[in-house]
Image (cartoon, rainbow over all chains, first blue to last red; front, side, top):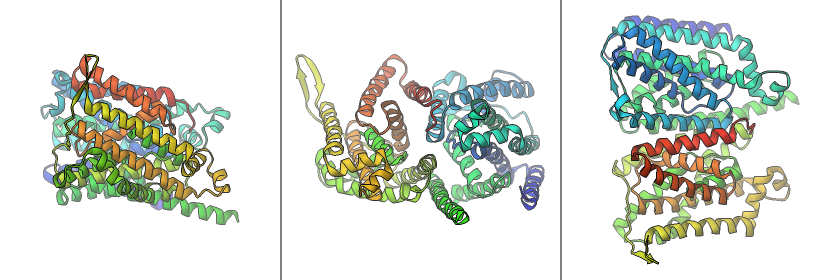
Length: 304
Length: 267
């Protein structure tokens, strides 16, 4: 990571943390909180996205799991912090099961299976009405101030950024890059590719679970549609991919762009929010094609 | 029929088109709008709209296949998946804007046959026959005609097919055109049996995708059989459990099958 990239990342992160203290209430408070939550989702998404090249369409599964585990425990009468801790344990176990299932899949099959997983959880939580509140969702009482929720969320984002940086520089990060380049070659030199994938996916899943819990703690409501949301998964995917800069700066800049665009779309183009998301996705994919051709030309020129 | 079209597109171009179901919804909407003008039968409307859907297929080729043709197989698969998801989301909102939230239903009444005391709903029997006929004709097209052979050659080895004078772009455009026609026919018939929501395209695609995975990518008979089995499972799940849990059961089976079948696969 270049010096200016590191500096800009730190500036964005500091600005977000300061904003979380300054703006706690009203529209600005909600906007800053969603920036931080989307940031956590995007940075955590970027860990397997960049290092393993896996495109998940169901990253919100972990978000929803975290939110629902926390919500169910609170609605059963557990107090805030024990519920937070226990739901973290439960959602991590759930995330581990999902990860173990998904870790064997590659490329397009991984994308389809993650999307399928998102729909399974959405429908399952709609069906289990007595526990989850059905399609209306769960409501929990507000037991934490907005400022504390914002602070916890900002701390979570900072920790996720640190995890991203540490993972990419660690042995596991290098292993996962090797696994992405060629799984056969990686196995031939003794890299446990399945364990690498599980480690990488779990490093991404845990912050997403915690983001779900904090989202519920602040907003007091979660439903299958908002918890296991395809839009949230796409937001994370777009934010981590839209700015073609390596390292943490890419998803951080991406989340600023996408969340701002999301706000404009929701307020100015009501009824066409999916279409605008679709348009951004389409352009992102087309750019990927164009960018690949450009890189191919550069490498061909270098070879000549 | 949806799964067969999807399988065709994947087998020949390595493209997973998430907008496939949305094209079926588009066909259903067009049929519903056309019914206000003239009482077309589903099959007449299918025949009339075939050239339109062929055109949609060519257009789709320009958006989700042509830009990624130089990418590696895995990269093009992911890029086409993202591009087609984008397209599906755009189409969903456009459908809601165009015809509102109400489900699209073009219900056609037909007499019920009585065969040895067993009542067979006429429309369902005809639809089953139409599906079998369409799949049979598509198989014949792929096996017995020159464009069909070109498509199969392209699916087996792109470079070798090019050496034999097959134009990969033109052939894959034709394959996507055929897949889109199948999606259109499926949409028209589906809406004459069940109401179809304007946002149900992605749902239809996903089920079709899993059927394709279960039946075998790039093969036509496998998805047809897998589709029938899925239909039975859906019906029995609705009887044995609650109607709302049907989707959970079906998707769990499909994801489970995908995980079992593709786990550890390098492709």
